[in-house]
Length: 58
Image (tube, helix red, strand yellow):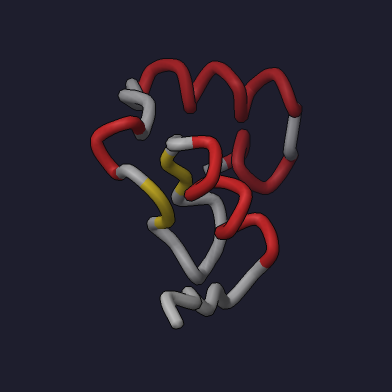
């Protein structure tokens, strides 16, 4: 019948929108070529912005 079963509702939404996501344990979902590029410097800046003590002390 052409039904697709998704492990999560967001996976169905990502597929329907033609996007990609790798935010949970069920990913990647959708079009993985549409995943954003991640720069380690930006991740480090965000962690510092969050001011998580355990991360900052290591």
